[in-house]
Length: 107
Image 1 (cartoon, helix red, strand yellow):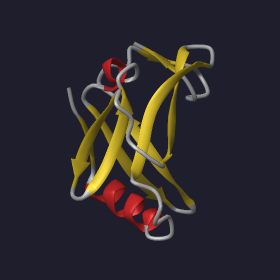
Image 2 (cartoon, helix red, strand yellow; image 1 turned 180 degrees about the vertical axis):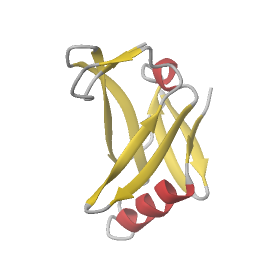
Image 3 (cartoon, helix red, strand yellow; image 1 turned 180 degrees about the horizontal axis):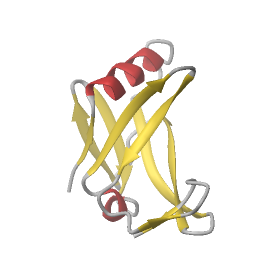
Image 4 (cartoon, helix red, strand yellow; image 1 turned 45 degrees about the horizontal axis):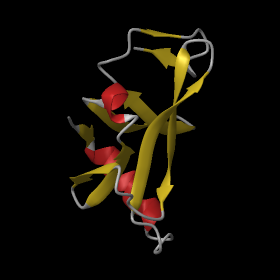
């Protein structure tokens, strides 16, 4: 199982981590939410737990809990900037459908 990041996502996470010295990386997971069933979560991680998988990409640690990992296997985390809009994009090959507003998905 694997999770990857594009170069632009790595650079963006690194820029956030510069001011967050006590953080060990970025945590990515899923939670039950929305009309399609699952929603992504992303936050800075204070630590790595015994039940976590760690993927180190160009020196940036991406931490995924083992419950979320089957839903995120093959995920590519990207960072895009289009005009004044910018944000992280989850390119997940496991997604079968998304809700109309794009905030949740099903596998």
